[in-house]
Image (cartoon, rainbow, N blue to C red; front, side):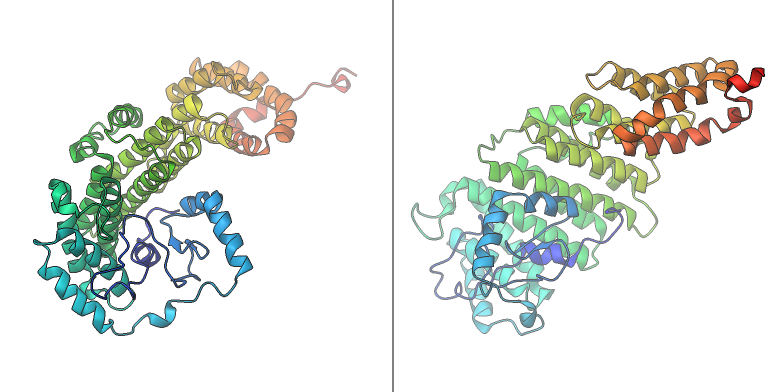
Length: 446
């Protein structure tokens, strides 16, 4: 399960990696942190959830797997194969003293935060990434100072520097870097053992600012605690996001940020001092529903389906599998083309049946049978649910198991995953009726 674990230090280093070795000399030649720059060294390359080729850390196996399929990753991997000495390990730098030049530049940047905000923001952000490799004890204050500068530039465009200057900030670079900086702060607060509410609030604010939505849109969207209602609210929020996201890179960054935030909130909710924190858990679920709606809005069906898969996993891990079953309605509506979609739907139907929730099972099967992916097994399961609802014990005894045997051999060949789910579940559901089922053969009449 990805939920319930601590936010990894790898993720923190991933956003605070990239040295500023050449950045501390006279505030010149500095790169804006808005593009996720690549380090000269191979930070945490041996740790999981880390792409050594691209020098990026990821919050979940799913986001790492998606990244590894991208053209940018494959190109970078090929380039490194041609030049195996291109990357070096940063692990040697861990525990070393902060470079003296970095501390001097830090003080100079803080001194000009009000006078030359653009330069100060650039230096502070790059220094934060540099000193994270050496001493994290002062990283938080540097990140907060960098964010303070960025917020000043957001409020007053005149503070963003002269056009053409090495330290000038565009609106896009400012938004992207504010997101990265605030996510880094959220991770740091959590890994430093601070209160979970501080970290959760920074995660929430990071995503809301980047998307241009109000925090209340998220925090108030889950008050009814019903998945389909939250999903409808999420589609409403996604449709009104003011940013256009014309570049695929920005869409991918937004999806990854929402994914990480949702995952972190669920982890924070499960690691509370007094047990699970339902409010944080439901906020995490609300972000996954937003990820689903936003990804669909932008035509990224793979990311949208991943959000539903994570919702099902999250509900199960927190003992709310019945809500995960409800998410199968969204799979039927939007994702039946995905390779394991029918398996997830079959699992939801069987889970509802085992919980004696015949109403939900019936609703799921009606939706599936009215779709383009109607299956022989879904017709059978619909009949089974109807007979159980009517308490038709004669049919249950004489026909239920016989009909299942009739279709199961073909299903085992065509979709073994669905077969296993249904066969194991029916073995339990039909066990009270097996004793009265006896196949009739010609030998019975001799």
